[in-house]
Amino acid sequence: MIREANQKDSINLTALSIQVWLHTYATDGVRKELSSFVFTEFTKEKFLSYINNPDYRILVAIKKTHLVGYIMLNLKSYWKDESNGFEIEKLYVQEHFQGTGLGRKLLSEVIKRYGDVFWLSTWVENKAGIGFYKHFGFVDVGRLEFRLGESETAENRVLVFKGE
Image (cartoon, rainbow, N blue to C red; front, side, top):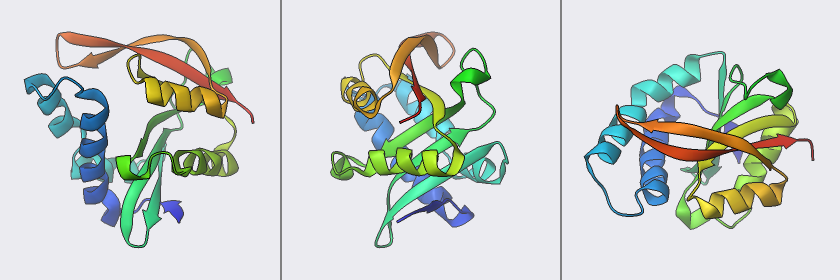
C-alpha cells in the first residue's frame, strides 16, 4: 500500500532513512562526517516538519504494518527553472525490497498524483540507483556538488524525468 505520510510515520522514516543512506553512501565504512550527517539530517523532528510543510509531500510504502520505502518531494525546488519540474529529494527503499518493483510503484504514484516532470540528484558512485533511474526514463542533464559537513563535497548527477 502507498499512502501519504502522517505524523506517526516520522520515527520509522528516520530509522529507514539512516539504514538506507548508510548502506548506499557509507561504502567504505562509517566515519565522523557520515555519522554527523545522518544524525543531523534524519530526525523525527525534521520529518515532522516536512510532513507539516505544504511544499513537501512524502508517500510511504507499507507492507502489512511495516514501512519499507518512501519518496519525498519538494514541490518548490527546481533544477535551473520550472521546466524541469519539482524535485524528488529522496527515494529510499529498504534493501530487502529493492528489485521488487517498489521504487517504480512509488515513482508511478508520484506521476499519478503530482505530474510527470521532475528531477533528482544522486551520488556518482550510486551505480545501482543511476541505472534504475535511467531504466525508468530519467535523462542525465548535469551535476551538483553535494555538501557533506562544512568542508566536504561529493559529485552528484542530476537526472530529469519528463513524461512516461
